[in-house]
Image 1 (cartoon, helix red, strand yellow):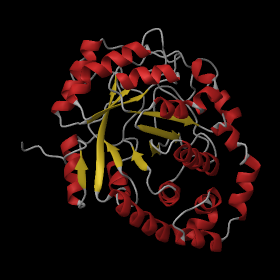
Image 2 (cartoon, helix red, strand yellow):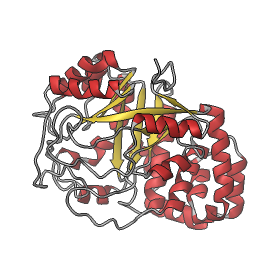
Image 3 (tube, one colour):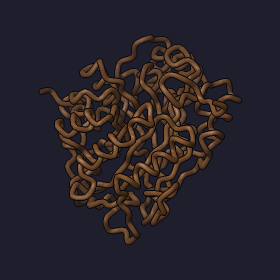
Image 4 (cartoon, one colour):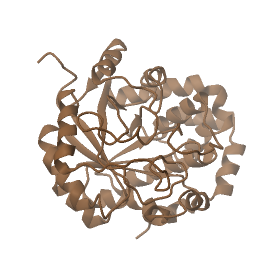
Length: 372
């Protein structure tokens, strides 16, 4: 089978750098006039040549978002059910070498936390665990999903890389979508960042979204953790990955997340920080390249940043967020995987969206309504 890794080899790092450095204003403007973009057009929009045209890019991105999504913004909330992890990711608060108290929720405790989310108005929940198969097994995740599914319109997962059969198990248990961050697409850097643990396997993780799509999950989300590698490389490879998935799995909704590095337990030097202007350029370029892809901006970003990004191209945001295991009903043992920058409740997010003329969608069939 022709894998994404095979396709990525057509755009090696040297070629990506050359395309970005040689992009011209004419190529940028031509890309903004096109209805269907090729990877080379996407690179032009990410390149330094596009920086003077950020306003035009934002306008084009807004037009495409309104055309394909209207004024609807999907609201979800993460539910961390275990932070026990065997990986040694250098940048992550769940790093097995970080000496902090850990927690693994029983199925009953996970259900109690989920009920609190449902009562707060959440219809879409995202289950998260650390990478510890002997504790947070696929069977455990499936049992939690099956238990809570009746209370939610959608149950998604962001867990370690699973096999095709394991994704089918989750699908049968009520899970409809998944998210898998590649973190960085540079293999050498990836292997240095993940020196030990199951996540060290670059190829296994890279092809995971394809396995999930093949298993029949309705939605597959991907993303790179911005700040680990030079912006132009991970930004381009993320968009390229989504573009490839759309063409190989046309029946699957492909989504994108755009997380930037933020503070967490432990210490890690961010060598390639992405400033706000470059961040906006990235989102606008993604929307122009992938008009029908959902774009998620998490609570890593501030309230004002997320509010300003909604009109540009964001279609999915989190609300009522905690990155700790527990904290709503069950007592949390630590502060969480990373620090959040937007602590607003579900109601506050809905009110903010309404003030901008957008509808907060908390279920597939109705908008945000706390009066009923």
